Image 1 (cartoon, helix red, strand yellow):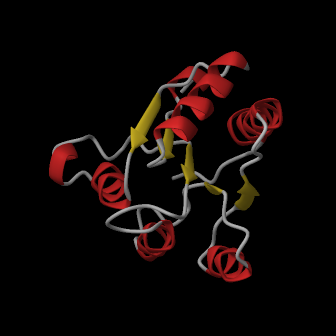
Image 2: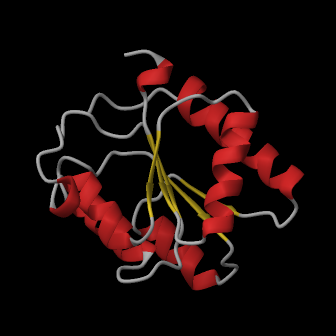
Length: 147
């Protein structure tokens, strides 16, 4: 599987943050397919092949999940909990990408097994650099488990 075959699942309900993240990835020549889920339910449906994604080939897992915490319907903490409870998804790399500075969110995220917790910078250039570094590390440098 080449680097371009590795899908990024971006779970983001804010259209501006979604556009910024996609723009930052593209601007930094990260040309992987980006699947966007706009809330926790949509993310879980994609990850587990249910609902709108029923029949999706579950052998193809995202190489990286960028997960916001403050989501409608099902929040990011619950998405992370369900990912880690499931044998087929518990090892997926999950980076929390959020504006939350609440200590409890940080503690809950790490307690549930997130791989990294990144606060979204407000400035586009800083945000772009943060996304570039995330992409470079998680898609090129990191050696994922054989899942």
